[in-house]
Image (cartoon, rainbow, N blue to C red; front, side, top):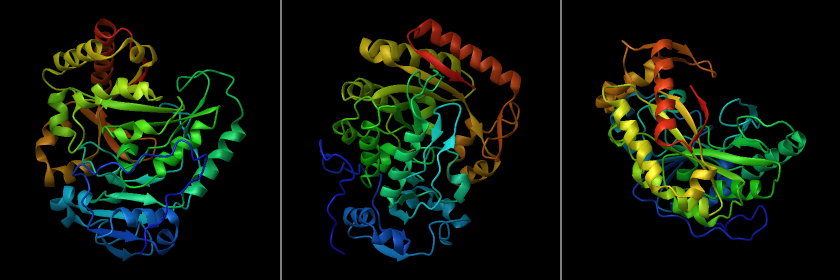
Length: 373
């Protein structure tokens, strides 16, 4: 199939830079695809990015028996993420209200991830496999967002998401920095919000994709770099950029026109955690520029885990569960999406939040905490 020309959905200036290198995260051998997704220009762009991949047509990106619910894939957890992509059509277009990171959760342009963080909630939905699914009907998604933003009008009351702009989380079910390795969906979203003076895009990431530095976000996209002590990240943040690399990128992304916040997440309670978080906060204070500090804010999120994910992790990365699965400290929790999870007991969580916010005040007093839970 011939490669398609890159889509130009909005003002073509500035043009996106060439596709970022895949950095070993993706060596795609198979692409499961809905026929309708293949017919769209964005689908053709993905195929051109991986011309050697075998194309397997499927009726739905949700109905792939070889992937979804296949317990045998536990032994291939990382290999599936590396070698498989899925192309689909996003059929449900709605912006859902949110009351923490953003005002609204935007319709997804992707779900799944090539990284393999041991605590990630996304694989719970698909079971035993979580490769990237790219939604190729990008014009419908961006059109819906443009109309939704217009209906909101001007924000008249400040809130914890932003004092002036409506904030839309564009990466609830994926990592947009990694998605941008696969297609121009993220570039198109950044271009969309660049032209919307009443709204901002926002996404959390654990991956430094310097390709994004050339997209001219004009302060209308907020990147939230997730950070944690390196001792935790080396066990839990599998296939991600190292925490020191994420921190080192903050100034560059601020200079490139992004608003850059920090997610102190997840906070894992274990022996020595306070000393390690103290070291991380001191490092942030030492290396970030005054300009980066002046615009920074943080979300503090203590670990939430899940019994089903615990069982999956025991099949491919049991060492992670020494940190994540702590029945002596945890209690059941029903999340906002209806899933039955576990979190730290109320007393443990309350003490953890209080201690970490005290450490922030002592070692990074410039870091405004937007919320902590």
